[in-house]
Length: 286
Image (cartoon, rainbow, N blue to C red; front, top):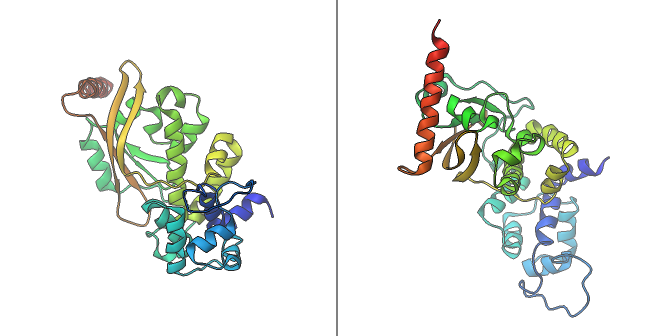
């Protein structure tokens, strides 16, 4: 069995180890005057701080006990200083049935509901698009594709970020985008492993940067924020965004980007939207 398969089979242990290695022993209250050869906390130190026997914690991290109690998980999470997203992810690794509902099959469902397509048609003045769990863009407004080539149907946001040479030009903050993209995908994978494991394995093979970020075991669940994009003939736009999880087992998410009212970004986006409308009218003429 390969190392990657072992990591996939023991997600709980791999995640706990990655968080343990990031904790500063002194800040956790560990007094140690010896020369340390390991990063972060040792297994036995984490166990004692969490009130768990070192031998039992070792069994958890090695994958020999995959169903620790909620009390033990909360104790470990406290010592490891996990945030809310990391705690949710930790619990999903132990009790997937309590994680958000996900599709049971290995094949993604790509059909976007007709009503959502109607909404996208009415939101022509905003960059908006729908993605599946693997981050495939399934539908979107024409303005979305104009602002970012990755936001057009047929593209995959992860593949674009790590494999397309245009990505560092489109994203002035590419490093931050890359970290967030991988950490967000890991959060999704916890609830849909059958659907996403093969894609993750493929990306690990195709991108050294993706592999390094994936192996950091960071998790992220950003539902709103701001992103800077370098748009052809428009310069750099700063757009806020909101995300909406669409009800249903498909795991589709709607992204809507918008400028601050009255800003230069608002003016630039209105001009781009006008150009797109004019282009569609010209294309419709015989």
